[in-house]
Amino acid sequence: MEIKAVILAAGKGTRFKSEKPKVLHDILGKPMIFYVKEAVSWINPQEIIFVVGHKKEEVIKTINCENCKFVEQKQQLGTGDAVKQTIPLWEDFDGYILIINGDNPLIKGQTLKDAVNYLNALIEYEGRNINEKNYKNREIAGLILTATLENPYGYGRIIKGQAGVVQKIVEEKDASFAERNIKEVNSGIYFVYAPYLKEALNKLQNKNAQKEYYLTDIVEILAQEGKKFYTFNVEDPTQIIGVNDRWQLAEAEKILKNQFMYFWAINGVTFHIPESIWIEFDANFGKDVEIFQGTAIKGNTEIDDGAVIYENCVIKNSKIGKNVKIYPNSVIEDSIIEDNAQVGPFARIRNSSVIGKNVSIGNFVEVKNSKIGENTAAKHLSYLGDAEIGKNVNIGAGTITCNYDGFNKHKTVIKDEAFIGSDTMLVAPITIGKHAYTGSGSVITKDVPDKALAVERAKLKIIENYAERKKRKNEKSC
Image (cartoon, rainbow, N blue to C red; front, top):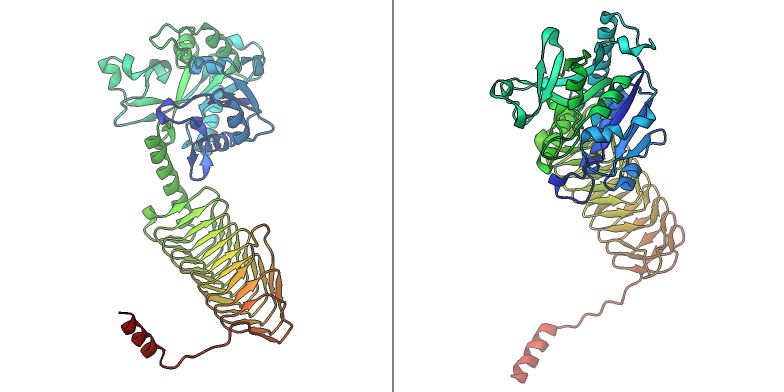
């Protein structure tokens, strides 16, 4: 069966009270429309057509799909009008059109595949060949995805006739008392045979208070002509939840996050107090990873086997190696932490830094745009910016690479086995040689040769009995 997909993404999202188009609001680090497009891709449609409108350039740029088509709905005249704008792209198509809302991020690709298989089975049962050119003889107009809700308030009800054929969809405000007791509701996701869809769209009217063209009306139009819509009931009703305001956005995000965490948990990841942990769509985890409470794993982050991320850490767009330990309250952004390294607590690693194997980055150490070689230790209160540090280096507490002169950033190079004494200021550009030493409290402004000791500080002066002298001086002044 041939399928083309129409994704509706033209709405302003008035109830969001936002200038941003509704479908671009993020869920777990991805715009809402991303999840819909991903689900649709599971059925391999011949073409994906997006209906855009409000801030269309921004929406098209975010979707970033070279092979997709985009159609503009210039006026917000309802879902029926939105789909009607796409007719020129499929008017001669002899297959089915999937219609789905861009604010339906919880629908699963597998569900759409199952619906396609069910529709195929219906077509075969009816004894109709989908490639038959005399489409007027076909009975199956399409398939409506539905769900059964204990509390269906607010949803359109599915009204059926004999043999489960749908007669119409009735909205909550228009439903009779008996119709409101129906628990099978409309998801807003449809597969419609293209020639019938074209005919029905051209017959839509806007005789309602909103003066809009409702897509749901096509069901009754085609049913009156003897064409059949069947339903495919989605077992997990959360999949049909639409996102119309920020609270529904939060609810959808919570559902997706729990689904992701469940997937990783059954594949070998331990989440401590999972409701307090944040993970985004692109995060990947190895086996025997532990994530403690209050941690956020964001962007394209990979955490390898055996790594432990302790409480209240933030890791974004980074790679964490095997058996790494990230201690509490540390922040790692756009960086690589190699196997068996330790970071934190209260450390910050950022701007494409690489922390080598077995490195120890301790409390209140910041590393920016730097590469730290294997077995090096910087355990206390240091800033290492724009630096290249070799293997087996000791960085004493309070060390600073002074990389910025007010105009440009400069590089510090510390070679293997060097020993940097506590409270050393390294004024870049500068190179500290292999096995070289710097004395504590020094301000180093020149390169230090291999195996040399560099000391630069004022000569110590001791004034005996200073406290007594100061006391007598104060007494005289009084």
